[in-house]
Amino acid sequence: MPLEEAHHPFEMDVKTLESRGYVRDYKGKVTAHPKIDPKTGEMVWFGYGVGEMPLSAGMSYGVTDASGKVVRRDDFQAPFASMVHDFMVTENHVLFPILPLTGDIQRAMKGLPELPADVYLSVNCSPRAAMSPELPPLVNGDATRMVVEITEHEAIEDYEVLAAALEGLRSHGVRVAIDDAGAGFASLRHTLLLRPDIVKVDTSLTRGIDGDRAKRALTSSLVSFGEEMGIAIVAEGIETAEELDALIDLGVPFGQGFYLAEPAPL
Image 1 (cartoon, helix red, strand yellow):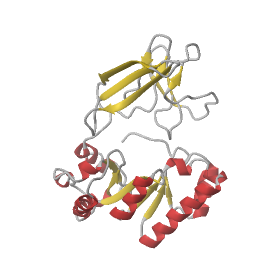
Image 2 (cartoon, rainbow, N blue to C red; image 1 turned 180 degrees about the horizontal axis):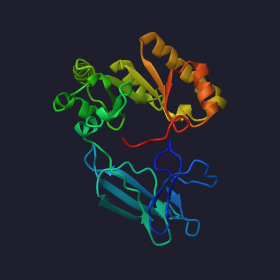
Image 3 (spheres, helix red, strand yellow; image 1 turned 60 degrees about the vertical axis):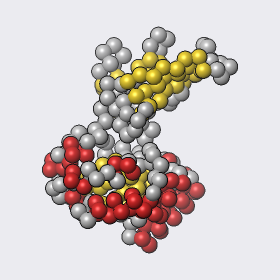
Image 4 (cartoon, rainbow, N blue to C red; image 1 turned 135 degrees about the horizontal axis):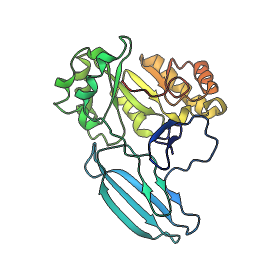
C-alpha cells in the first residue's frame, strides 16, 4: 500500500495491523485509489480533507456500481487530520491508514535545534496560513534555517497580498520555496509572481526522466530559469541511480528521494 504517490509500498501485519515499514524490493502489483471489485464491477473510492481546510479531519467513502451510479456515500471524521493517499479493501472491511499530520509550525520549529547546523527545516504552508498575522511571531530562533513551502491546495486570490506577507517573513531570514513545480499551471504562476528562493521540481518530472526527452527538456528549462533568477532548484522523488545521473547531467544542483535517503524521525 503506497502511503503517498512518491513513496515505496508500506507493509502492515495482516493480523495485528502493526507497521513493518517501507518495502523497496516489492515485485507485486500496487493499486492506487479508486479500486474496482473484480466480481461486481463496483468502484470504491474515498477522499480526505473533506470540510473546512486546512487540516480538516473529514473524510468520505463511496461506492459506484458497474453502471456508474453512486450507490453509497458516507462522510466521517478521522481521529485527526491526515494525508491519506491509499486504502485497503477486503470483502467486508475498508481500512484507512490515518497518520498524524503536524500542522503546528511552532511545534515543527521545536525540532530545529535537533537538526545538524547545516540542515534547514522545511514547512509546507498554505497561502492562507502564509498571509496570517499569527505566522511571523512563530518564526523564532534561527529563521535563516527555515523554509516555507507554498503549496497548491488552495487558490491564491491576491498575489500582491501574499507576496507582501512573504517579504515580511523574508525580513526575518526565512526562505520561500514553491512546491511541485512543473506539475501544473498554478506552480509555474507561483514561481513567476512570488519570486521564490527555491523551486522544487515535481516528482512527475523526476520519475523516469532518464528515458523521457520531454521531461528532460522541461527540467532543463527550469534549471536555466533558476540560474538566470538566482533560484535554487531541487528535484523531488529521486528513486534510481539513472534518474540521479540524468538530473546531474541537466545541472540540477539539489535533490531528495528514496535513492538518496528515506524519511526519518527527528
